[in-house]
Amino acid sequence: MSAVEIEQLRIYGYLFGTGILIVILYSYIIYLYRSEKKGERDYEKYGKLALDDELDSHILEKNPKLENDKKE
Image 1 (cartoon, helix red, strand yellow):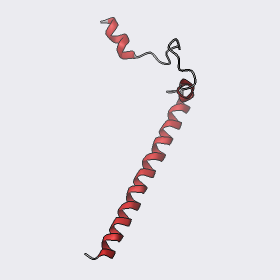
Image 2 (tube, rainbow, N blue to C red):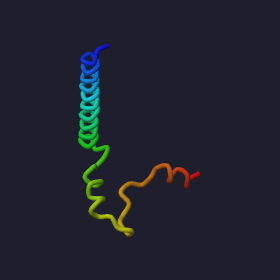
Image 3 (cartoon, one colour):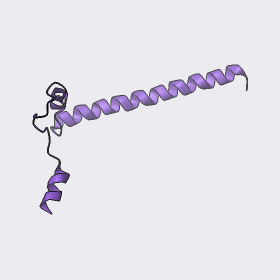
Image 4 (cartoon, rainbow, N blue to C red):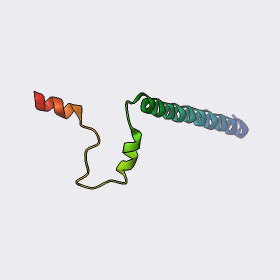
């Protein structure tokens, strides 16, 4: 293989990798948008967590695993 062919393979690999990462990013954004629209999660309260970060702050969500362990 010549240096030109290796460079072309590198460019194609870069473009393919970038395309895969773009698809993953946009699918994650769509997932977040849909889950917020369905009411499964409220990501705005997670954004406020950075502003209201104190030791005596209230808990955002209760952990269902911890509640199940206490019942048993």
